Image 1 (cartoon, rainbow over the protein chains, first blue to last red):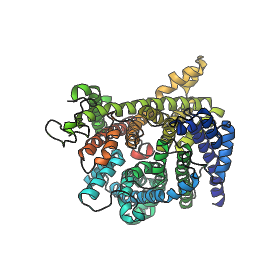
Image 2: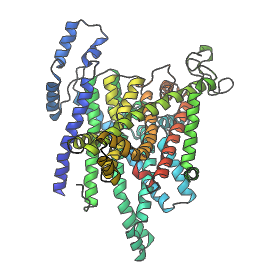
Image 3: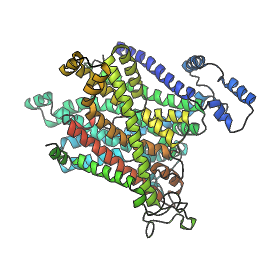
Length: 309
Length: 283
């Protein structure tokens, strides 16, 4: 187990290096030179532009800049904002808490509602309840998330005056409800579909037939065999879904004026503040990779026979 | 036989019907729309609720929301089409090269594919938007370059299994070139799965375009795009809710159509696969 964790951690390093290289090239090679575009609107004299480039280190060759960037990144330094002279790491990490809170609330909703619904649908396979759940799940996958958020905002915030429609509200739970539902409901539908498919697959497997033949009660079969085996698949899928979910926080945060990394990256893109955008996106990817690493380890702990090689 | 099984698939029929209707709506937009989506602006008619002359109401500039929703289909469908053509070309070409050439090319391409899979599509698209700046064309590029990893993987897997089969060996001994074996012998076998991925991918691209346009990164006003309409409607939600309702329904129905069509095609082409676990939804 220990060796497995170490090996997984070592695999992590080339992945994060590759990603940081791609992101760096994407954001620093494409024309529309960042220094010029942040300074461009002011009609500066060419000497001044050169000076700004020198200050930001943009006059050096790209390879040198990448080496410098990655060395600093390893020390947790993500450079300075082009627009305001603040440390990117400081700002990004001050916003990380709000994003994580939203993302974990949303994935909890998805797991706590989606998995039982899918399990239930699989046991009642072919009945009208199963059909209804399937239809709702297909709808839930197709509904634009932010539009669902708009509807929830209108209904619960404006018509019923039950919940605040935007802002962080000093971290109060009431402010979290609508953004977390908006972010989580689509994934609830996906998890319900996946759970249903996974459970049906397990139900038709040989060992469940054997368990039945042994005369085990349905409850024991469901708990001991079906759920435990389906859980492995559900867990992996939830890990993968989490990546898309943490990416979608960008849209939901913007809709609800939630002060996380998502709203920061959108601002940074509008202002062409490349270091800030780059820092935000890297942190989002890093969170996703970490969650998947943890899922892998958990997966291995539950089911030691699985060999990843 | 084929026709009969097409009718037996409810998903395929229902989704296909929706997609065909949306395509027709996009093609015939100028004939169907009662007003011009951009130029028929009359401030005297600003923010009229639905009903009477304006079935879906009007926006702040007094433009007919129904006409804008009808024309919006053109943008959403082009996003679906263009991005999936780009993603399919990239994914299939890289998958063919990786599978057929093997060794160095395989390692390089699969390494890249795994990195693409470990970055959420929206995050990658945002990175490209950060580099290129906001705008509809840039959004096309961003979504067209970022979602090819699944296609690449499936193509490669198919090539690896076909490579050992007799008909490829036969083609080789007949002196066919590598490129012609790849494109004429192996490619037809992957069209089915690739079509399914592209159909489901269209749904995803339409959703992403709407979301990014909602953030203000896509089509800029006054272009009638559904996401863009929702973006300008945001501050008016409590005053003029119809501005937020109709474009949202349009996105929902269109995406639902593509998702059902994709699911239906998968059932038709690969009846053994178990629903959502294989491809759909998990991006």
